[in-house]
Structures are given as C-alpha cells and as structure tokens.
Length: 268
Image (cartoon, rainbow, N blue to C red; front, side, top):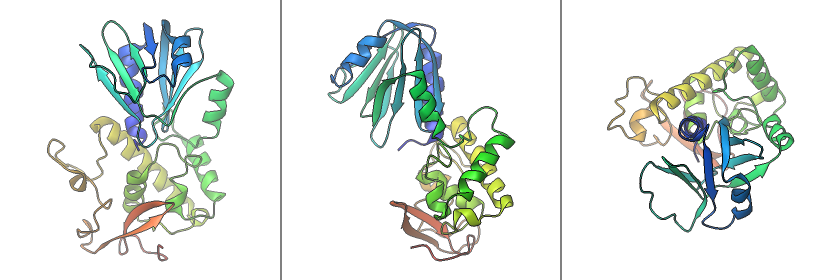
C-alpha cells in the first residue's frame, strides 16, 4: 500500500497537471459512471492529501475522495494514452494529459461535511504544512489513550496519518523503540523523537520519490534492502551493531527490529 509520501507526490503532481482546467472524467469500468458524469467538464480547483487519502475539489461539485488501498494505481500519460484496462475505475483528462485510476479501495464523491468528518477521524499528518507543537500534542494524546504496542499504534491512521509498514519499521528502529512497548508507556521525550523522525523520513521520501532511511544511499541503482535499516532485512546483520534483525507479526503485518538496538519486551 502506498505510504504518505507517495500520496502527497500524487496530489502535487496531479494538481500541477490538472488544476485550473476543465477536466473530462469517465469510468471505463462503469463502477463510478454516475460520479464521473457529475464532475466531467468541471474546473478542478485543487488536489490535496491527508495521510493516505486524496481529495479533489471542483468548481460547483462535490469532492472526489480517493484511497488507493492495497491495489490502487495511477498511470499518467501526456500523449497518446493506451486503451484503459478493464480495472480502470476513473479517467481524468485534458488536452495535454490523461490520468487513469485503477483498483482503488475508495473512489467516491462526498460533501464538504463528509470530507470534514474523514479528516477529523485521521491523526496528524507529518507532511502537512504547519506541523508544529499542536500536531505533536495531538499525536502524544493519541498515544496516551492506547494500551496496544507502539508497533500497532502507529499503523492506526487515527493515531498518525500516512505511516505504513515500511515507515513504522524504520521509524521505530531509528528511535530505538522496541515495537512491543505499550504506546501509553512511552516517555514524552521518546514521543517527540518518534514524531520528529516521522516528519523527517516522510519529507525525505517525498523528495526522493521512494522510502530512503539510510543516509547517502545512491538512489539510481539501489534496491529496497540497500535503502533501509531493518525492513525485510532479517537475513542481514544490523547496520548499527552487527547483531541480528528479528521478524514477527504485529497488527496483521510483519515487522522487523534489532533486539540489541531496540531492547524491551519480546515481540510475538
């Protein structure tokens, strides 16, 4: 599933290509035919992201809400787009560009109040402009109310928006926090460190176009294990201490950690 840095990149790129223009919309698959008809020919005003959610604001029309989920994908063509695949839920096109959306978990039109409700139930987004003491305080409050392991808590989009499995593994590794530590047991200093690391790594992902946590990684030919500290590296020694990287399941997803660099209770 795309994590927050990818979603923000989609929002920025599509805003750049489509905003301020009348956009034609269609649903080749047919599952969004009515919604596409309501926005087709309207001016797209803005594309915005919060965590893993995309919001498209139109002139005198409802908001288009998209969540890619596990299988959703965008494809963008500046010239001669190929025929859409049978899974293409939505096409957005102008004279200069065509965007195909296939396989999203959510593709719907919503009212302003519905958009407000979606945003209200999401935790703070480390990539949102103006992330400051208020968002840190919200994050700390969200953790304080949860007794689940921190490795489960930060995958909860109500706690912090935009963090997926790769980022949770890397952020916990870099902050030295054992994934099994109870969320409400973290000291405030560690909560602040966790938040700052999230802000830094997601911003780095936006700039690089991929998740990169190991400094000075050559991006051109690097594979995933070259760019990361712990995620999927159970066959390799820890980059910091040379010890073993462990793997377990948590919150229905695999997680990796170093028992030496992230000491604490056992992870099951």
